[in-house]
Length: 300
Image (cartoon, rainbow, N blue to C red; front, side):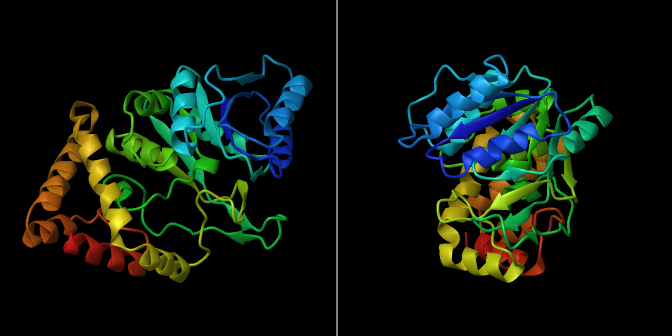
């Protein structure tokens, strides 16, 4: 299994993340990493870790250095690793629990004939890894077109088999997307299997420098969404839908039908949007979040 690690000024927390790799019960792993233009001691930390575990096991990507941003950085790593048996995204500031890779590997062994994306719940902790609370338990199954409304596949828990990684690598996402959300959208739309492990496998560190935080309650998520407003959400939905339409041939027949319905609704009338919302799977996880989503979608 190849761990894809993108680093950027992560010197404060990356040693704990790297140490958690070494504590994995599944020991058949290696690392492909790139630095996204760090100005702190991150590169030195990675060089020391490489010397410790061996250069053949911790490989720096040949395009390391220029600042691309988190999502493009991860997706360039994925493009270089798509032939691997399996890939695991890793943030630089979390701590993996010892059975994280083992649990994913077991699920991958069970299904080897179709694209598979595995992810799991998290323990939400503060900067000092204290205050442990569980991330949200899903109330609805993952899939498409639900993946257009909400990202429930957290990148710091995500593992994909070779088939899923190859799909994402050959189907670049739109500007502004996040690598884990786009991976979830693509695999679901192409008829792949999405597994959400109910057991938490990561200590997800919440701190001011997080690219994306994780509000701890349904109300907190709804308030955060209200503060952001519909603009960003609807813009990204339109971009995701438009980008998927360029890959129609790769999508499952059901996804093609759902995508056509949603695309027509986004470009059509209020009644077209009402029709799209009748799809039982075009929804978010909780009633409060779904109410907000439906209002935003109806307003266009």
